[in-house]
Length: 235
Image 1 (cartoon, rainbow, N blue to C red):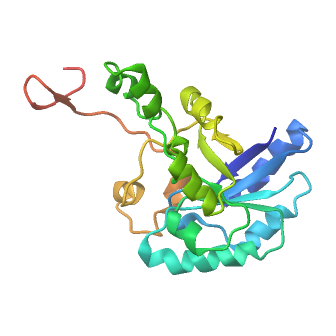
Image 2 (image 1 turned 180 degrees about the vertical axis):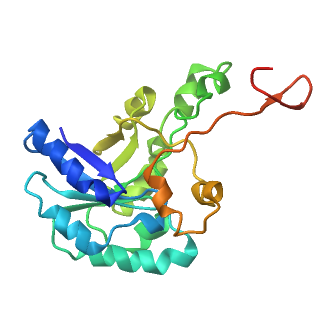
């Protein structure tokens, strides 16, 4: 079994190292850095090299994000730089353009590429009237479709990441490749613009620091089908 502790807040590396040492897990522990969704959360190559020198871990995982076109060349250059560090580095790719354009040794497909519908909060409601055949098909990953799987394997993918959700894991385990699962949170949706930046009225990359803490949102209105208008959720 492999355990990985992942962060995009690099001030926490020392705390993570302390957790690993206190747990005395032994071998099979990695530290993951980077971001699935933000190009401004990628660590400097020098920081990755420093993390790889830690005695308490067996390697580093770099998570590369979904990449807007205007940042594409920069991220490609960055991936090439870190790939040449000569360390025990696993690279997770969440952007098909980056996967296609960069030379990455044994890349892992992240959740930006591996899609599952089980994380949708109302998935069981959506499927309530569907047949078992449709329900099973809907709750698979997109790589359970043989042509998609063959395409990504042809692009070098040798493992995938997905959410630790029971029906998703059951489907992913049928794939003939390693599966890594995220514990504690699931991806529900990606957006073309940064909701954190919008919430704090900042322009990227000045908003990057705000992603280090969770945002708690309160439901204020819900759509009422009878009145065809919005109303407070407890109305």
